[in-house]
Each structure stands twice: as C-alpha cells, then as structure tokens.
Length: 290
Image (tube, rainbow, N blue to C red):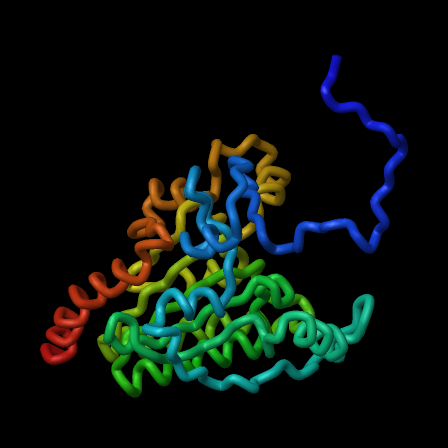
C-alpha cells in the first residue's frame, strides 16, 4: 500500500501561479542535440561543447571576439541603401529596408570597424546574415571598399568576414557591380603590400564567393561552413548527378585547394594574431623591394 494517497482529484494550478521557464536560458545543438545553458554556449563562443558545431553569429559577436575589450571605432555607420530601380515585390524596397533595420538594429548587411586585436591594429568588415540574408547590395560593396581604402591609407591589415546568400536581387546590376569594385580595391591593397585575410563563415555563397571572399592573401574558414557559388540543389538539378558527400563544406573545399586552413572560433583571435605577426614583416620587405 502506498504511503501517499491523493485526497483531492483534479487539482489545477491557476494560470497566474504557473512557473514558466524563461526563454533564452538553454541552447540545443542542431547537430548532436546536446543541451547546454546559454551562458556556457556563450563562454565557448557559440560552439557546441560536445561536437564543436559552430553556431551562426553576427558582427556584434565577432567584434567582441576579435577586438580587445570589445573597443572599436565603426566606419560609415549610417550608410543606407537607396532605391535605384524602384523595386517592388510583396512590398517596396525602401519599406523592406526600413522594416529590416527596425527588426535587426542594423543599417545594412555589413559593418566595418577598426581597433586593436591583441594590441595589433586591424580593420574588420563583417557581414550579418540576418539582414536580408547577408545579401550584397550597393551599400555592402561601398562600405567594404571604404574599409579597404582605410586599411591601405593607414597600412593596417584587413580582415573580411563573409556570411552571405549572394547578390541582392532588389538592386540587380548595381549589386553585381560590387563584385568588380571590391575586387579592384583589393588589388590596390595588394599592391600596397597590406595583408588581407578572408574568413568564410556559414554560409558564403553567390557573388560574394565569386569576388572578395576568395581573394585573400589567406582564405580561411570555420569548421563545417557552407562555401560555394550556387547551392547544392541547383547544381544537382543542373548536372543531373548526385553530389559527393559533404559537398561545399569547408572541409571539402579545403581538401580541393580553395582554402588555406580551417580555424576553430575559440582559437580565431590568437591564430589571426600569429598569422599577421608572421606575414607583416614579409609584406614590408616586398614593398621596399619594389
């Protein structure tokens, strides 16, 4: 016989007395389903403690990771898109931009800044996927071009962190022109002997991959990042064949020679510092020899 017997049946707790678990306290890894606290997930810089899955993060998190004490000066902060084509889909382009700005707190899909990384000067341009899929429009191209100019004029290394679905359809040809503009600016940076490191994160696709993302003195990536021009589904439908396992993953791209190395986010700041300390003296010698 049980020592406990419920006398009253059908006990119901009033709604106003129910204890709900607040949102945002826990993180579940989409890869291995391991559950961890958000505090622990943030401590590991948004990577999984069990399988090392690298969760997508945005410019605010990357700046916090890279810049000493999260201190930096943002460049061209207020630059926003115009509407050169008077584009309308389910809503007018200016309305879509305004709505996305309100929802994200961003002006466009890239932020640029300069500061110190382990005491070393650095200019960073970082894309935000949550702003219309990190799509590359005229503002993205212009801000990256201006950041490259700043790096060249002040002889400061330039880091590009790419995360994009490709060109922004609402700007059509204007968007595609940014491929040529940013590539030309990077050529000037190379002539000046200023190091350029391109970090490809998940996902890096379309016109971004076809231009500045693959033009680094060093092209590096985070583990498991999707890197390619067209998506796997489009390629499969085009060639009519099954694609290799892991096709377009960072590991696949590294194996086929398009990346220099893959870096764990937890080691990113130190590895970038070591790389720049190794490269900068060589770059100075090359410039002096010209």
